[in-house]
Image (cartoon, rainbow, N blue to C red; front, side):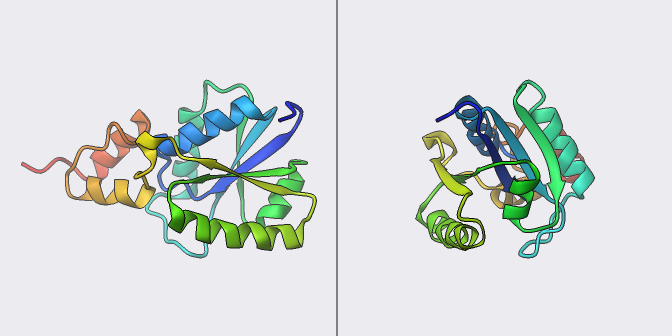
Length: 165
């Protein structure tokens, strides 16, 4: 893939997981720039964390990547891509269920912006089970999440859900 291409990776990142970081870092090796687009107010979900905190988590987790930026948005994904002059929407896939939803979204985005291509990247096997909602549920019941999320997120989840005695 050309190194001068900008890709966006949109998501709620509530919270960001090591699976997200894996896709972002692999994308950063393939594209000249990856802009992580944080959906501030998602329509399908009610985030646990406020946009400021989710952005802080992302910035801390991605600080070592020179060609990765974080930005927030509340518009169509293709409008966000155009704001960054991006011609690629990068999406991670874990399972067939992800593909069904993401395929439909890719087709809608293609209809809105035929010049912007969606590129799917398969989750690494060790992250194929990992989801933000799963992490939140494990944390809420006192389970260990330190291997599933960046350290800054693990610390915050421990504050919200102290280990049970």
